Amino acid sequence: MSARSVRIGNVSGYLGDRYTAVDEAMAGDPVDVLMGDYLAEVTLAALAAAAGRGRPGWVGYALDQLVPHLPEIARRGIKVVTNAGGFDPAGMADAVRAKVAEAGLPLEVAHVGGDDVFSRLAEFHAEGHAMENLDTGEPIKDWGVEPVAANAYLGGFGIAAALAAGADIVIAGRVTDASLTAGPAAWWHGWTPDDVDALAGAVTAGHVIECGAHATGGNFSGFRSVPGMVKPGFPIAEIAADGSSVITKHSTDGGMVTVDTVTAQLLYEIQGPRYLNPDATVHLDTVRLEQVGPDRVAIGPVTGSPPPPTAKVAVFAPIGYEISTMLFCTAPDVAGKVELLRAQLREQLDGHVDQLDITPLGVAAVDPATQWEATVPIRVIATARHPEPLLRFAPAVGSLYLQGFPGFHHDGHAPRAGEPWPRMDYWPALLPAELLDHHVVLGDGTRVEVPVASRTATPEELAQPVHPEVSGPVPHGPVIELGELAHARAGDKGGNSNVGVWVPDPAHWDWLRATLSTERVKQLLPEAAGRIVRHELPHLRAVHLVLTGLLGSGGSSNLRVDQIGKSVGEYLRAKHVPGPS
Image (cartoon, rainbow, N blue to C red):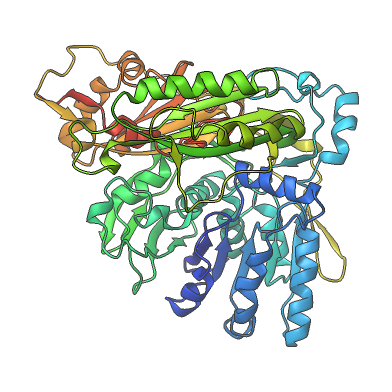
């Protein structure tokens, strides 16, 4: 066990994050571990589709980012942990070993296995595991499509075991995002799976830094106050032996770390105050934040419970094909023009495509000063089980230039859609965690088993708390935009959108609670037709909302333009509400 905190620096928050992140981290402040998160639910869907077409199931450019720095990583003794292994962590580990050998470096590479359970689906079915959908409760046998991938979310102790066995670079597949931080922290401090409070703190820190610049001002509703916002830096977590942490960043990089930027990420993609993770159940309502210096936010000790007895499994299946294009219409009478477009495309495509969605985006300005203030984009998308019917789409759209609404046009500098592309659907399920074969494979082929907690959480420890609705008078001050006083961060979990809203000023907390009652949220967000689950986190002065079903069955398959609900929080902040009295 080390006496000092471990410094874990993030170098990626998703597949497609800034390519120079590893360069920046190596040139920045010292860290003990480089952690790269490349996976998300929609990313797994894309990798599953690529693997189905015979392409590698791991993130190729992650290796390209790493290779130039291998000699310096070896010299400094930095550890590297990443989930860029995707669907084939063993394959990526082999590729990394080849580059290490080519450079003649003494770096050991290991990979974490056991998340891929696709080949065991029939076995699970035969043993009576229905793998019910977390959102609908339906058994997977009723899905009606054939899965092509199934991956369980693993915890961090495989990573910890690999590092303890001497690995310098650990390649994982579908571990939870926070496991990429909790694993190195457990190795550094010598924690066991029963150190649930310390693990809860490390999971919390991991959740904050897992999405890169999300913690330093990226995707932050207070972005105008962020210095260096053109290129915000990547975060660092300093995790102590008791699991408490300080979130910071490289001192020379842009962005900032404040209580608000950390709060934003804490509220991102959660389902309530109980944050279920394979290493611990985190009681997020015990999290307290304190600004302890410039770009330094302390997260005090966090309360944890044992991990849940089940593991989440992400299952993916191809469900057909889609094709889309963007058209534009110009005022006046945008509504009439969109109505005509719908009628003309339906006349040509009805009976051939399964879904045809035509969505105008925004409204034209009154008495516009420029043509573009008068112009409204229209997203048109069609789906079908097989690609052939969608070959009618481009000719149907193209036939309307001389017979459609007046001013019909597309962006003449953008390519026109011609060929459909595959759609993947997502099925979130649960399995007993004891069924998983969580293990590590070292470079010489040695297999290392992964320890587990002595007990799992009880239903009472897992249950989300129930917060009664606010009683008393509704706020009746002058009407304001909600965003004048409140920040928000929105994310996705399967078919659900989550929105965390908080106020920086303690004086506004009671006002926010009253303003965002369940009934008031239903009025403010009429699109949220499903059940709204509401929780409060008083230490963060936050109301957390889960908008069930807003994203259909998941981000990879729904037809919303804002596919994974990234802008739902900003939409809510734009609403006019009575301000504080």
